[in-house]
Length: 72
Image (cartoon, rainbow, N blue to C red; front, side):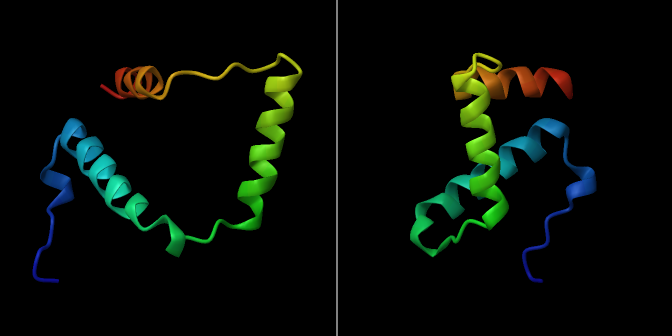
């Protein structure tokens, strides 16, 4: 591959930023993405937990910050 990224030399922050950039790029053409069956099942389970008051939705920006703190 001509543009090889040396992942082992990246910091955790650089890896997370790269993952976010990749995800954003992949999300642009979401019509090409087919969700697997397990994904719908998982979403339904999560929705049921939220409806039952067993789980609460979080702001995505805050959730990402919390996850980043866990791995620093």
